[in-house]
Image 1 (cartoon, rainbow, N blue to C red):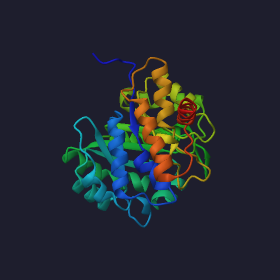
Image 2 (cartoon, rainbow, N blue to C red):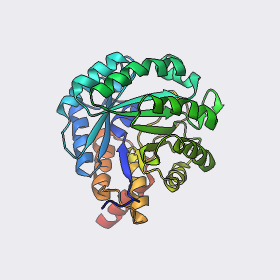
Image 3 (tube, helix red, strand yellow):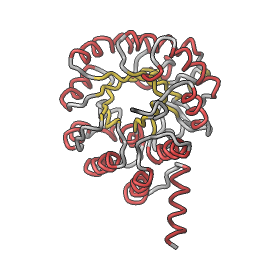
Length: 306
C-alpha cells in the first residue's frame, strides 16, 4: 500500500533549467543528465520544449534529444509546447505527457508567448482536444499565480479565472506556479484552497521559485494543504526569462532532503542526485549551483576526503 504522505518530484531542470543557461549544452550531455536523473529515481522529467528555436535557442535540439533519451517504463517524460506546430513535433517525439503554460498575468503572457492570456487559452482548446484523442496526459501550468514583474500582485480570483479554464479543458494535472518567487504562505494557501474546490488536491502541483528564500516554506504550506506533486530543478537551475529578477527553481536536493528528513518518502536517491549535480556543476556548466543542500553535502564530502 502506498504511503499517503509520499510526494512525487517533477524534475524541470533539463527544460526550465537549461533553457536559461548562457552556454549551449551538447545533446549527448543532456542525454547523460537525463540518464543520471533516471538512475537517481526521479519518476517524472520535463525533457524539453518544442518551442521555436528562435525564442528558446538552448532547446533547439528537442527533436533529437527526444529520440535518444533513455526510455524507462517507470519514468514519464513531458514536453512543453506553445502552438500546433509544437504539438506536431511533440507527437513525433512520442512523449506521454503534454505540458502547456499560460500566465495569469496578461502582460507576462504577451512577453512570454506574444499573445494575451485569453487568446492563448482559446488557442490551446483544439490542441488539448487533439491530445486527449491521442491518449496524452495533459499537464497545464497557470504561471504568475502570486505576482508579476509588470502587473504586481496577482489575486486569487485572477488565478482561479485561469485555473478554472484549464480544468474545463480537461487538464489531468494543474501546476500552480509562483514564477517570480514572490509568493507568501498565505497566498499559496489561499490559491491552493480555492483550486481544491474545483480540482482534486492530488492532481495539483506546485512550481516554486526561490527568489526571496520562501520556496521551502511555501512548499510545506502546499503539502499541508494536500499537495503531493512538486516541481524542482537539480542544483536550483533555472529562472524565468520574462520575469526580471526571478532566481532559480526550487532545488531538487533541497526538496528531497527536507522530506526524507521528516520520514516522508520521495523515492529519490539523494546521494546519486548530489553526484549528478556535482558532475553538472564541475564538468558541464562550470559554475556554482545554488542548492543549499547540494552546497552543504558537497562541502562535507570535501572535508571527509581531506
